[in-house]
Image 1 (cartoon, rainbow, N blue to C red):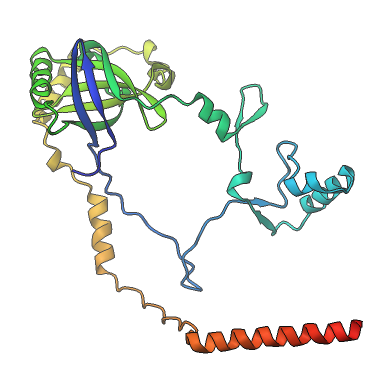
Image 2 (image 1 turned 120 degrees about the horizontal axis):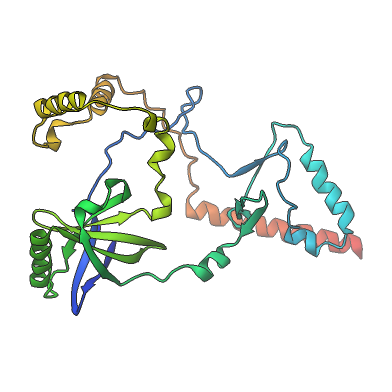
Length: 306
């Protein structure tokens, strides 16, 4: 079943049903790692800046620069020197120095801190309030974003009201529209009935769905005859069949897995011998010897100073 991603309740009218949400899909893509064939080592990625890239905005002075007594112009000159460094140089960027930035339609770049985002972040929802019920056929599938299975919370008395909502929605062919916050993102959702359970679909907002008319220009000048439409309907009827998801597997993934299974595994690298650790007794002896040597050195310096 997997791990629940949200626990709360679905509320409609005066009825509240404690539930859990579970992802309804599980991508099966084959994920590759990247390796350096010359060293056999895993390729890693770092946050870096490149020396040849020009700054997008005036950088903030580092803390050590603010505390320095050196005049600001010379510190700025130091930064300029770094900017003209050879193009192959990069500078690792610490997580604390990373800021988010967005380019506005005006072309201006604005940055925002984690604290500012946190100050306006919506509070996590504990309830999905169904605001209205609509006919499922009226929702274009393009609005469906991600599907979750809705399960009644065990040992909470949720089973009967859950089943009641499921059966009522099946009979009416209606879906419940509501809102909630999952993690830090607000969602418009549709709670719909499956055969034996409820599902929750997160929906795209209206302004996130592109107008199909933008890509179908020129159709208004064309016409089709009634005879052509009937012939197309006959072709559709000849190819019509019940939907069986099992018939439509991912042939490419199966071929890829077969290729991977047929390949000879790479030769494991020789284990690197770790330096032998000195026994505790030897370590203590070395520490004592170091302390004695330091004392003798300090005594000699004191006699010379005297």
